[in-house]
Length: 118
Length: 118
DNA sequence: CAGGATCCCTCTAGATACTG
DNA sequence: CAGTATCTAGAGGGATCCTG
Figure 1 (spheres, rainbow over the protein chains, first blue to last red):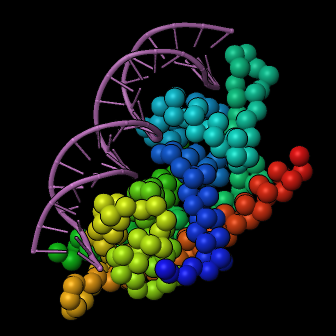
Figure 2: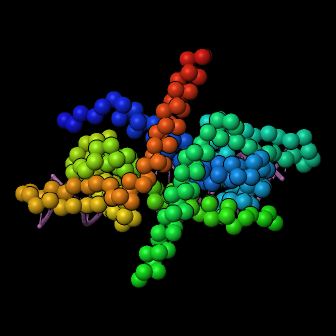
Figure 3: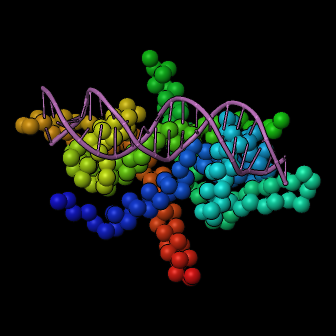
C-alpha cells in the first residue's frame, strides 16, 4: 500500500475543488470576460462569449454567484437590466486565469511551429 | 456590435486551449500526481488516484501523451511494466497546477470558517 | 431585457469481463 | 502487469419557445 502524505492528499483535494468550482463549459470564459471587461449585462455577456445560449449562461452565472465569485445586481431600469461583475473573491482567481492564458498562448506558438516544420 | 480587441480574443482562445488539453475528469490529477511523485507505473497511478478505473486511466494517459505532456516508457521486464512521467513540456504546467492548489487550499479554509461562523 | 421551461441528444464516464 | 472491448446510465449541454 502506497503511503501518500497528508499534505499531498490535501493538495489533491484543493486542486479538485478548483476544478469543480470552474466546472462546466463556460465558467472560465465568464470569469475571464468579467475580468477583462468589468461589469457587464446579461446580453452583453452573451455577445462576448461566442456560442453560449441563455440556458447555460443563466445556469453557470448562478453557480458562480452561489460560490461567491460574481455579484448579480438588478438595475432599476425599464425594462429590467442586470449587471454581473466579479466579486473581490472572484478576482482572486485571476492568477490562475493568467497562468492559463500565458501557457495557452505559448502552446499555440509551439503548435504552429510544429505544423510549419512539416 | 461589441468591439472585442484581437488581443482579447487571442487570450480567450489560449485559455480555452488549456481547458481542452486538461479536459476530462482525471487529467489534472494525473499531472499533479506525476508532478509530485515523478515517474510512476500504471498500477501505481491507479492506486494514487482514488476512484479512477482502467479505462479512464488509459484514455487520459493517451491523450496527455498525444499532447506531449507525458512520456510513456515500456520497461524490459517480465511481465511488462510501463512507467509514466511528465515531459519537460508537461512540467511547464506546474505554475497552473500550483496556482490551483494554492487557491483551492485557501478556499477550503474560507469555506470551513464560514461553516464555523454559523 | 433577462431569463425559465421543455425536449432532445450526445458524449463522458463507470462497471465488468477479457487478453498478451 | 497493463491494458482493451463492450455495454450502459446519466449528466451536460443545445435548440426552441415562452414570460414578467
